[in-house]
Image (cartoon, rainbow, N blue to C red):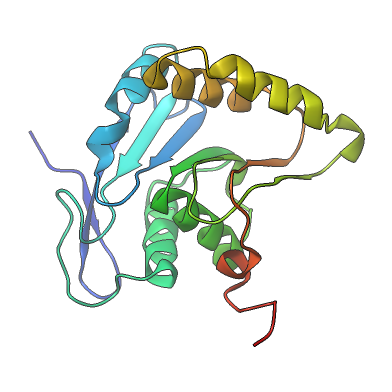
Length: 196
């Protein structure tokens, strides 16, 4: 079976899984430290079997990707992600990030914009604790979001995360939705906006 990899600018090989029809709505998963793309297999299997294209990669230094000494920082993670998204020619993708993966997604948007992104879900991400929505503010209903998160808590973690991803994909008509649990704008902007 061939290995799905891309080689990024510094020669690092990034491993990825790409399941489902190539013309289906793409959902891309980003793992936490020190995990790999395998952490998302339950959600990927479920969503791929329900008609979505699902992608997950092993961040550099993790899993089956190269283990370089250099480049283990958010800027490089974001650039690696941009290279993978470009190589797969994804558009309108839903990016789902957990822990460090949430930081990777946030930094990707800060460095590369939202041109290929439809929505994002940051789950227990390393920055973040607000719900920030871009697009039609009249469509933003924070109490609905909090009720939905409370509703999710009665399910086992795998089912809860899968339901959250489905809710984001099928959810609001917003151009971009960030569901986040801790907020640190400097991660997105790449600078300390608080001074000091």
